[in-house]
Length: 192
Length: 331
Image 1: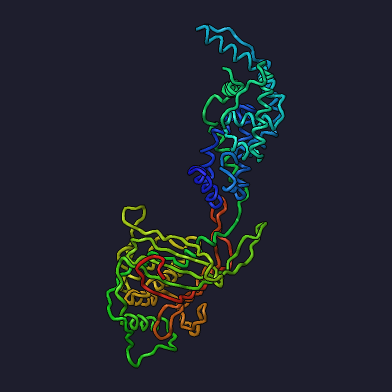
Image 2: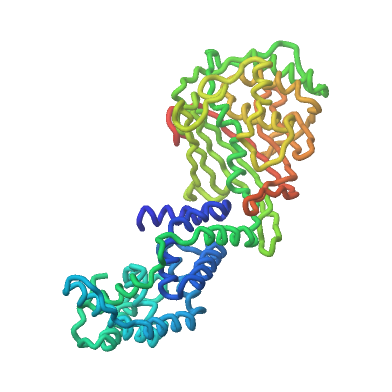
């Protein structure tokens, strides 16, 4: 456990008697959580999700066991469960993105234009792929890609074995590569 | 951009919020939401209880003892047994104890006391209900003589056997310039005259018993017990305490009172609005034997507020051993 994790656990413990100390955790993690929720569900839903996450964390703080992991994945785990209630809004967001995604002509150096057009062109199929993924696969992929969680943190957040994290990630990356039109077998393993 | 993961991350970048920080209003919304959550209502008995045992003894640990002869000097032909007048009894006790000599104690040493303490407290049993719980504990306390060294308090259940672990808590030293404020009597010497001790017992700071409601006279008497507890090797300080106690209104003499280990003595008692206290002394030597106290109010944290709840809590402590030692942890 890192020093910051120990400090987090102490803040949680102190907040049992001193509610205001819980604000320390908000200030430390709200930015990461809000960004991730915003990416997945949009502005208004993200605010609701983050508020619900901290409220739930506050109510459950007595049950937090520092021996089972750090506060950060614990918070992302709660947020993921709150996100599940907004799955329709999330899928609608990806579908809207897929419809809107179309490369636009840009002026500038040819290589940069090519790269931008290429990336923009792939957003549509990628967004459609995200909308089609199962919730469990999407959670693993996006916690790693968007929340910068390690495999261990994802396992702790979703309360699944780390082997399941790896197998889900391999499966979902094959689907992503298929959606992008690349060879599903060519994806390299990323370090955790 | 070749990796599928890089494409996913790029999409995440495109979807991120326009500002790095969440909306300011969200923080207010979250914190307001926390305030509306029904709080666990639990008496914070553990933290204050054992600290209360020490009480101002921590501040009172700074003793300078100058006497050299440990022999007890008793004025011949005098005996205050049966004395019911508290002022006369306390003045007699002050004279008798003040005539004693204590051992020479260096500033770098520690006053070690061993005691047995019984606590009856209310504990949360769910649904906002409280159940009375009784604990009998052994307490070992090392207090720095000059207050500039860390002391230690150790507690464990009585009857748990020698193999049972002690729950330890360091009593931080107070050295000038290190985040604490030196007060009169701390790290220097406690008053050895009645007037000075009276001021010390009635000092306005509320640095102790913050979770127990007390009036000024009740607090002064409880501080007197704490000073006596820490000053058992300092007869001049004890004499000053007796003299100062004689000026506390409404104190009573209560003969035939037993401490927790059934050592019978004479008690100086006070029944206040919030606490009932008996400080028990040996009827011959006026050595401090312990305290019996009940208190009716307890502070409970509820969100940012403090509520005063009506609980009958009882604390009895019997001093069983006193010594001067060179190091913390030495018994």
